[in-house]
Image (tube, rainbow, N blue to C red; front, side):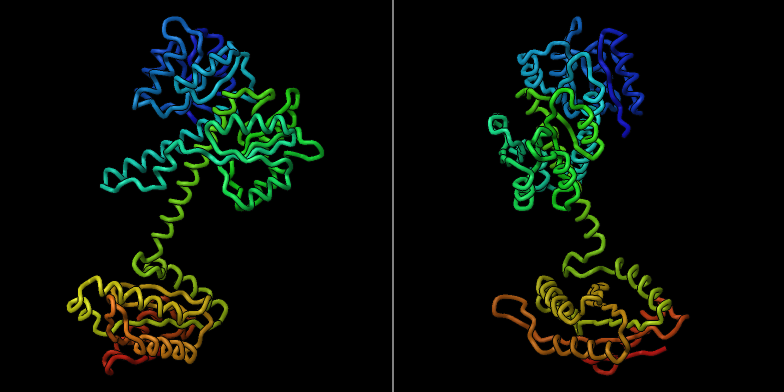
Length: 456
């Protein structure tokens, strides 16, 4: 992946080393020699991740991190503190200043690339989330509950898979200060938990007795329900070969044993955020796609989708030689409903009409709201005779029962129906639809509440 990484260190040799390693992975690298210079760069340029040395003269890394995180312009840039000091107090101080992660000198190359990739992906998701929130506010749309939840620091559901009871208990106790952990002692129990509950993260020990932790990671990735679940593996020192295999198969991050409490919480926080942001954006994408093809009032497909789908089905029918019919229906005197009872009553009629319309279609048929009070059904592999039966059944279902428009209030309505079928290889979606529209006009001209067919 590509991202802009700012390397901050007052020692040029350290800067060059990190710059070379990151450039080899195709990151765009910026450099700074002091904390103030780093702040200035972050304020005027796009930066995705900051690697910030702690021990610098003047403004040290802790203070630079605190200032970056307290500035609304730079608050959401992930910061990794790079330090030769492996003291718990330094990590606590860094977390209090807003640091997102830690690297200890000499910097391990696997750790460097893994941390930067993870935080760069999180930054991309954060940018997208904030942009959508800003767009919504500019349009006067209040932020919905799903977005606010994704942006919040709400406790995450974390599944810990470790058959060492002391280790698992210790991890669960640490996590419980911020999150909601669940412990599974073996892969089978883990898979059962994943099937029954929703989690934000899974932590897997690669030292399971008699079990392959990487196989569990692979099984998790191959299941639709947990395909996007972030995974952190716990690795023993000297087991880098298995770690690399895990990262290759899609493991998101790792922690070396013995596990540091602060490092664990920092890694978990990053992955839980990433999962929530990613889920929110994925759900919004699905909703956007659905909104582009579904009529919001009736729940039927809209005209835009119908036109594309009709073209596809006509092409398939011409190639296969199978029949294809189109049914176009219109609510008789619908304008009088709006004029007499109001538009709320009109909307209630359209919803009920759509429900009856849907009940009279097969699984292979496509029911659409064409516009206003006009509705359409595309019926693959359907002759005119069969389409006429569907049209007549639909007409009867509309006329037989009153349409509720309020408490204890209903009105009787009818519908006119026009039919057309694909007649030959020269037919097009436009010619079929025009014939159905012509048949609908004929049904209305003949007195409404009837079915008419039109052939080429």
